[in-house]
Structures are given as C-alpha cells and as structure tokens.
Image (cartoon, rainbow, N blue to C red; front, top):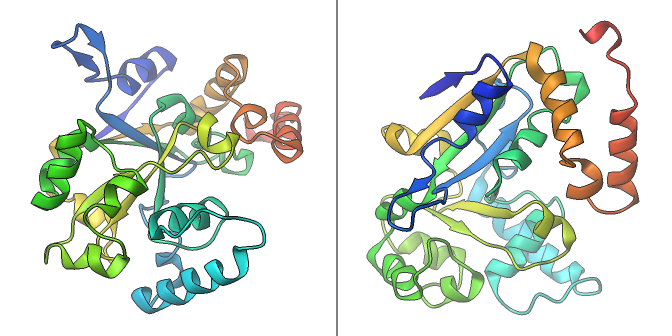
Length: 263
C-alpha cells in the first residue's frame, strides 16, 4: 500500500500508524523503516547491484574480506558478525539496512539535496508478523528467547553458514538481524539488517502478496525542505547519525546550503 502525504502533520500520523499495543497500553511499533531519496530506488541489496552470479560473488567477497580485515577488526568466528561488519563498512552483501526509528528513515529520505526534485519514499515492514513465514527451527529460537529479531548468537543455534541458512527451507524466507554495537553509528541509527535466505531473491518481489505487512509513504518533493529543516531542529542529522568529522562536515555542508533554484 502506498500512501501519499500532503503535509508535516499527515506525515507524523502515517509514520506512527498502527503502533498502539493494547496488551500493554503503550505505543510500541512492530515496524522497521527504510528511507530512500527517490521513489525510483528499489529494494535491492548492494550484492544484487553487482549483477551476479550472486552466491559465488558473495562467497568470494566475504572470504577475502575476512582474510584482509583481521588487522583492523576481530568480530570472532561467527559468519553473521562478519557479514554485519562487512555490510557496515560498505562491502556488497545480501544484507539491507533498516532502522527501528521512523525519523532516522526520514533522514535518509531527505539527506541528498541533489534529489530534492524527486519524491522520496519511506518503507515500513511489520517485522513481527513476517516472522510467521520463518522455518520452524528459527521460530522456536526467537520464541524461546522472547525476541522478534536475531542476533548472531541466536542465529548460530540453528545455522552457522549462509549455505546452512538456505538449506533450512526450500522456499525463500526473510529474517532480521541485529548487528553487534560495532560503533556509535550503529547505535545512533537504531539499526538492524534484513536478510533473505537466497542471495538472488529481490526483497520487493518477496514482499508481493504480503501487502498487509507492508506500507510505503511517498514524500512529495515540495515537502522535502520543510521536513529537512524540522529534522535538523530535532537533531536528526549527520552529526548525530554519522558520528565523527565526516558526518559533521556532511551536516554543515547541507545545513548551510541555499535552496537556490531547487525550490
């Protein structure tokens, strides 16, 4: 379902839609979010942008990353921690970035001034309901843990490699993996990763037929400046989400940019 918003107030209502939990009388969202600067961007992984053959490329990329990264990182032996580390540092993987925060997603839908002539997009996925499609062995692990997402330790109770993950069930399935707190960026972005059991499966295609578990908010180009200014005032900026001198510089460059002829 795609929702087009008309103003800031409407956007707030849609970002926090379906978040009331009557069992505890609190607002607790079952959704995770992903922001895109352009509606033309599709849900594909960085690995899929390499154009295949995905499983073979994935093995080569991860093997060589592990071989050369030991001087700078020591995430242990877990494939899942290595995969999270690789994704975090820009290696093409089957993982896709998501956040528990709708405002963090909104930041990434409005942070590129070169895309202000284009409508943006926020994806919301009900990760709790999507667990119903997991293989039984994985369901049991998170049910016993009383969790809705996996850590590397939880996932390793069932499978230790990508091949073992794919062998759990013939039909492709989706799970969500919380990375270790590698740095402040992971923590501040309230981040987690989605991972499909098949490297070549497109998430958009997998979500077809599951419309009741997914929504998309279309952000009109003409609202991006107002949204951006209000996010900056709320301290949802590169300075916070990308800690360090690089994030600080990105924030200052964008913050002091003129609208110019982009209006």
